[in-house]
Length: 103
Image 1 (cartoon, rainbow, N blue to C red):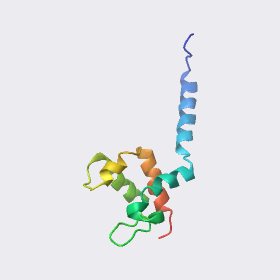
Image 2 (cartoon, helix red, strand yellow):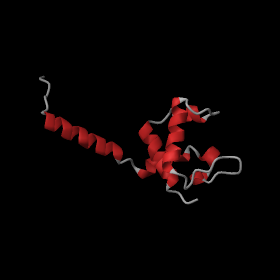
Image 3 (spheres, rainbow, N blue to C red):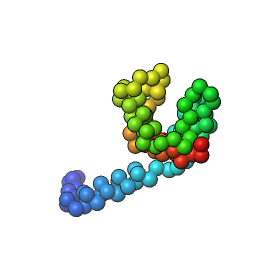
Image 4 (tube, rainbow, N blue to C red):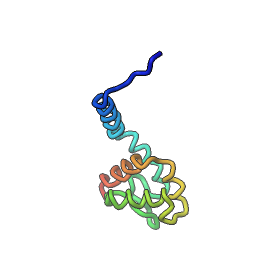
């Protein structure tokens, strides 16, 4: 079987379609990822006293914290372990989901 060679244009178009498919993450999937945060940060990000609330927070600040946890730049008891289980894109989607919740 011969390998299929794509022209530069066809390869670029295929890459664009693939990245667009990844960018459109199912909102129910994102909500499921965010549900894993409920033990500490409360349902929909409404935390109990003593834990950081996430609902209505700044998306960019949350994402920076998550990425810092993931890369080990921010000390944590458990967040550094949990954040490593998600891709950067998934963490961005989770931060956006919490930011969209009412305070």
